[in-house]
Length: 76
Image (cartoon, rainbow, N blue to C red; front, side, top):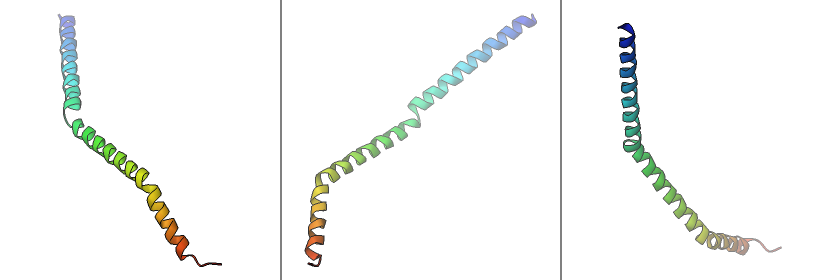
């Protein structure tokens, strides 16, 4: 009889553990982690836009500053 109770107790314990793991996994996949993914995707998009702007405008801005420095540099 005692052995049966221990087996039943172990089975109940395993069932509760499995339900807890499923609930935790569901919360992780469907819950609060979603906001973190959205923010990281938004940050990645902003970084890509900034890299694109610097790639397109970088030489123009660099050339403009270079010209201003050369024009104002005293002739030797």
